[in-house]
Length: 183
Image (cartoon, rainbow, N blue to C red; front, side, top):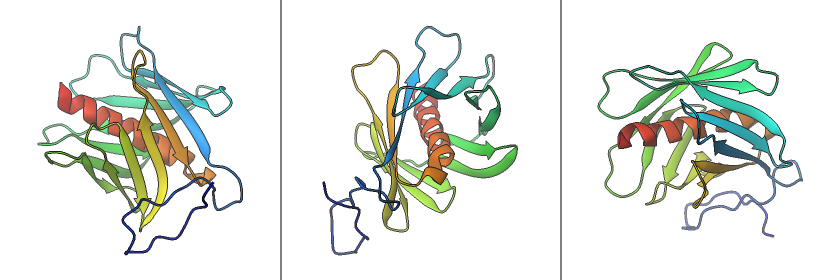
């Protein structure tokens, strides 16, 4: 397997992230939507199949408001959609503090997001199923939607364990932005 390389501006290929900076393999999270639920509800599993987090939307709201909880039912973050914006825009709070925002940009083919979030940027593919998250020119995480599942299912592949909650919150916000625009 190729190792992660430092980006150079001459290469058109995406950097691979099969090995992380800490010498081990990447960490993974699996986000699975609960299909038979009154509100948007997701379970988040680690690479061993253990429930690590869950996401629950508030019912009967004009905009999306999603709460993220750890396995002990402690709230770790919230994603709130702004009201009266042209494109879907979400504020991300972690442990009660505003941490950043994400706004879906108007594009014809390839989904793009304006991030004010940890100095990152994000691009998606034509089908809006696969995303790469960058810091400077290096890949921080990939977010992939798994086809042929009941409900939305995403796999998050990331390098740095300190980014786990940040990447999870971003993936949930991207899904919410895509759902908001399709309504």
